[in-house]
Length: 167
Image (cartoon, rainbow, N blue to C red; front, side, top):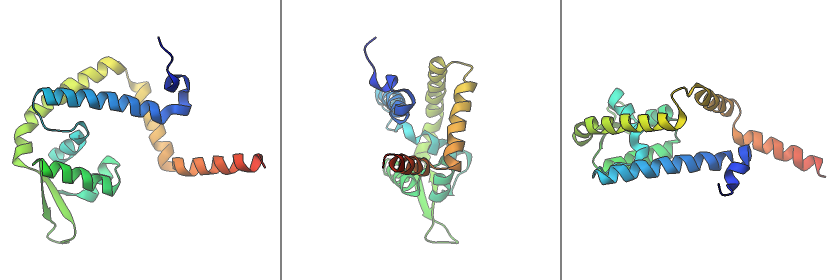
């Protein structure tokens, strides 16, 4: 096996390792979608699932439920709307608030998407193993820790301590 810097750096390159894995999965999902003439981006999956479970929600709700920033949710909704998968209306109580729903095009496509997503889940299980509780536990632990104290705050504190020691 050839030298893999990211792997050899271990936890020091954790963000790069996560990104590399995510990019590989997204690339391959996109490749399959394209081969089937499905004009959907892999990262839209969560929005489809959220809106299927609860239709007509605000962009703020989407951002909160998915853990995205509001600008990221706005961009996602815009791109999905441009492709005809979402419809937006102004909230009757607060005209500034945009309410989002799955379009008829999206609802028609959902059965095909669900088959693809089920296949994707099966492929992921082949990679991570049926008993993935340790992996999921570790990811939950990372999520909880970063919600309690942000990475920014931890990084800043470590930098200040290191900077103080070296003076």
